[in-house]
Length: 386
Ligand code: LLP
Image (cartoon, rainbow, N blue to C red):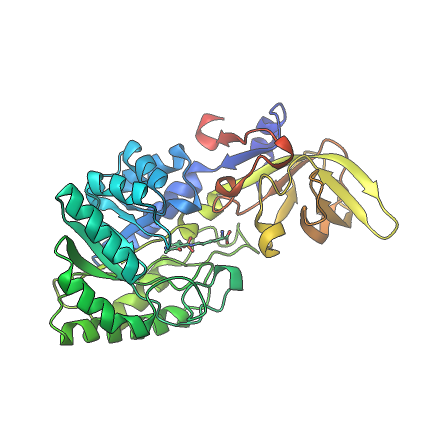
């Protein structure tokens, strides 16, 4: 619950806005840093989860690298002080312009997703007269047991090099003079809460690492991606994911030689719980079958419920909130029926002007916002500037 003292400071602010609790962010980063560092693991933060400058600076400060999926994200990471040697560039559709830009920056590695992409990077690197560092993204065909829109490691998904192509890929690699293979890359999905998924991933990583080594190719980096989930139901009970348990799985089940580095690309687990979308009730509408709370925030500010039917905990944080509860369909102002944050949500009886906090919105929230309906630019409030 966002406490009443903080909520009182929101009273005069224009809504909707994203509120970032910097203490939660810093505690989360610290926990992830301690648990990874003591095992000699390297974390690259996945900018796609949130590329807000203020958050990025804190993440850079703790010493994590950056995992980017567009030329603009690479640029943003560099502007926020991440060293190019700690930047990876992933994505199934990198344009020539983006590849050329990242080559000029001499980033740590491109995570390559197809043989054709490998050939294009080789050609563009040869034109620049530089070597491109590359990690091959292998599709391990491991089921992440998460929403199908955010499952990435199955044969039916567009991501990674299919297993059947790897023999050819290894041969092509030998001919690519301007490519330096640094490692292998895997990522099976997002919001994974079943830790056995990561154990299954380790088994596949071991198999593919051995496969390459048997063919005389040395692998320096094992990049196992991101995907660690968070507790959307109970953000106050579990504000910080269990990084110990997560990293411990890889420590126990990944077979690595002393010179081999293990890299992670965490996004959601680092930033989701520090963010809330704060909005006001515009209208209370009692429909024929429903009670609607119409908020001034909509799917344009937080798209996850509309897109994935994702659950986000909602709270009425206004002072003097009624003790009696009612079930509401909490909706936004956008002209779409999918513009709904939750159905039959039990909330204290609410009135026009009340503040509603939509929790766990720090990841894939503001970055997925749109201007649909010509909505206003998103606003921010940071706890340390209140
Ligand atoms: N690495 C790769 C290659 C990825 O595709 C992703 C996320 C990550 C790392 C970071 O995953 P994380 O640690 O955040 O789970 N918009 C969706 C999530 C999309 C995830 C895309 N890839 C959502 O709101 O749930």
